[in-house]
Each structure stands twice: as structure tokens, then as C-alpha cells.
Image (tube, rainbow, N blue to C red; front, side):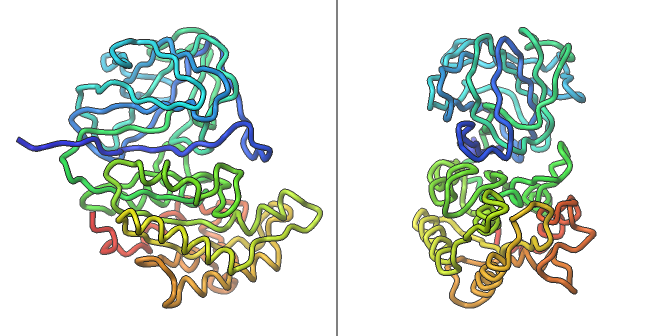
Length: 383
């Protein structure tokens, strides 16, 4: 008989809706059903759902939670509708600051299966713990519509709320990678519902194991907002992920660009190259201390981005210096993927090449994310 263990098959890192910088609009719910889809990266004989009220200031009352297989839009296959339980109960109150796993659902969940999680939230939730780039567009609808085949009077949700993970019961020893970093990890500006982030497309190249994504768009290595800074997120978003053996990192763009963006038209002051390299070294050292293989990456190009104040001569100089260090022999990572070279315009290497540009000069489209995924040496992912 095969021994099994809980292994992460999906993760969504979350941000605090009470932060001062609001690149994404926070929101609350009252007497609504929130229905969101996700796509697990791995297969298991059972699954459990993780919900979060980590940054809420109010208790989160969940009067019912269901899962089902998605059809399209807000629709579900009602024959697969399954009530979740929490310590045997169908309702649960999650205190402010807390997270919870559902009881196991004793059904096989397959990699790539579109699973819908519906939550009925009868009381005011307060501003919600949320993630900027969910797997796909979600929906909220009035009242209790947990088992509705299609939601009535739904509104679209372009951010994700409360739903932060799935674990599956997989063979013991299953190894996975955690993609950890900023919007280039999370998949901003790739097609919703297509799983075309760079980690999602890299996952499709793997022959064993899989990748879960804890990227946060706007996240920084050294400074809080948007989300806790990467060094502060290590424990929660990597070390507690069951099955993690490898970490893929892209970070630094927002350290360089956000100071100018948030202070525009006044100039911002980006960190120095020495500060960024020291932070990256600390990041690698802490992950290595936990026994993980750590794959770093060069900082992607962004010259000419549309966002006022983001692109500065000072920031570009630091980026070039840090990237030169990453491509040399003194970096602390097990390996470095040259993300910048994978998507840069050969004639203007500080810019994203036109066919990979999502349109804002800061993010890559689906084709650009594939170019990054294709640049990763699979021999480094010994899963």
C-alpha cells in the first residue's frame, strides 16, 4: 500500500487590504455567495481547501462552503457539488488573523481540473484578505447560491478572496517547487483562466512533481507594501508549503520602480545594488538553511514603462549592476535563470521586446511568460 502525505497543489499569497499603497482595490462582502475557480497543479486521492482571514479585522462567518467542477463562467456541474466541512460542521467562524483547512474531501482531484469553491458569507466581512491575480475571474452574487448551477445577478471579481490553497493526498515523498516573488511570478497580464504565468507554463514542461505559485504583484524584496516584503514572507509562503523542495525566484523590479512611482512627480530613491545583493543573499541563505534548492533570476527589463516615475536612470543602473552580479560567479543561488535575456529586445536590452510586451512595458504577455519558462534548465528541477 502506498503511503501518502498532504502536498500543496495550489497556493495564493495574499496582501493586507489596509495597506497605504493600493494598486488593487480592496473590498468587502455582505450576504453574498463568492464563487472562485482554481486549477490544482497536482493530483491526489483526496483534497482539502485552505481559507484565510489573515488580514481581516472582523471575524469571518462562513455559513456554507461548497466545491464543484466548473463548467464555464460562474457555472458548475451540479452533479459534483460537494459541501465542505470544518471539524464536522458545515459552518465556521474564522477569527481575525486566522487561517483554516477544511476537513478532507475523499474524492480524487486531478491536476488541471477546474475546481470551483463557493462561500456563502451572510454577515459583513470587513475588507478582505485577498490576492491580486487569481487563477481566473471570480463572481459574487446576492444571497445563498451555494448550489446554484449558474449564479443569478453575479458581479465579476478580478481579485481573489479568502481562498489561498489546496492540498492533495499524494504519494509520500512527492516533491514540488514554489514560485516566489512579484508579478512576473504571479502572472499579471497573462490570460485569466489559461494558467499561462511563467510558473504555470514551466509546470507543463515537467515530467514529475509540480509548481505552486506564491507570487504577489507589486511585491518587493526589502520593503513592505504591496504585501509583506519577500524576506518576511519566507516562513508563511515557502517553508510551510508541504512538499516544497525547490524555490524559483523573481524579485527586484518593484524595489527599483515603486519609490519613483509612488512619489511621482518627485523623484524616488531606489535601493542601492549593495542593498539588493545583500537582501538576495539573505534570501538564498535562509532558504538553503531549510534544505531547499534555490533558483534565482535576473531582474526583467522595464525601460519605457507607461507608469509615471517607475523607470529612472538610477533604478536602471542598479538593475544592470545586480544582474551582472547574478550572472557572475559570486551569487548565492544554486543556479540563476537569465529571465532578462529571455524577453529583452536584443537592440534595446533594457526593454521588453515588442512581441513579449503585455502593453505597459513592465509586464510580459503569454508568449513572454512562455519564453521565460523555456529558458529554465529543467535539470535544475529534480522533483
